[in-house]
Length: 205
Ligand SMILES: Nc1ncnc2c1ncn2[C@@H]1O[C@H](COP(=O)(O)OP(=O)(O)OP(=O)(O)O)[C@@H](O)[C@H]1O
Ligand SMILES: Cc1cn([C@H]2C[C@H](O)[C@@H](COP(=O)(O)O)O2)c(=O)[nH]c1=O
Image 1 (cartoon, protein in one colour):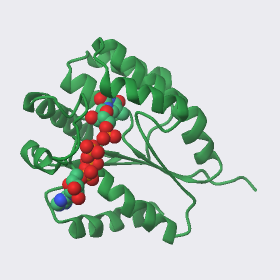
Image 2 (image 1 turned 45 degrees about the vertical axis):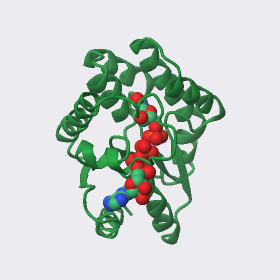
Image 3 (image 1 turned 90 degrees about the vertical axis):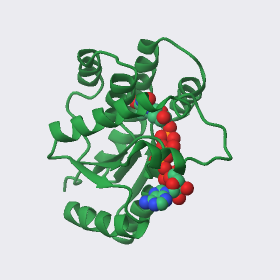
């Protein structure tokens, strides 16, 4: 009997929107439904990807270098983690995927969209998440939620204009790909969001 392919769910949103909070809930929820679950993140998710993450989050670099390193990390992540897991029937939940490159390198930094389209076509021409959960919040709410006690990384130190452009690009992608995106109003309470997530996840089971 052929193994049924697992499902791939990506979590997106500007920094502080609440992704990490809801990834924990989603992982627990899917495990209670008997799914083998792989919880991972980008940039990162592999030993090499984690080294690249350190670089892109902390070193100044040319915009195109940054975009290429994001996709290099993604290529490794797909080969080592995402594709094998899906093939054996596991579900993969990833804290960010390619929509983040469109939002941050495209919207935030202004990299031309056709370059990002070309990288996406190169690195994963046939694979897209089955579901992309976009946690959407006004910038001020996200900023206020970022932990005031920890040091902010290179992206988190960006100004309001950067996050405004990143948020707009996320919303543009959501409108472009309505079949896989669900936009969640992340100003709601955590409990209200979890109720909404349970409904969305049940629809995918
Ligand atoms: N709906 C919510 N209402 C109130 N507080 C929330 C909500 N969602 C998340 N938070 C709180 O906001 C903070 C940031 O949340 P979280 O770490 O999940 O954001 P994130 O989007 O993963 O951020 P980053 O991308 O920077 O890691 C946490 O302290 C979390 O408890
Ligand atoms: C995948 C990806 C990520 N980024 C940025 C977005 C965030 O600011 C950081 C990752 O931090 P998080 O706390 O784990 O969310 O990286 C990006 O600019 N481009 C990308 O493709």
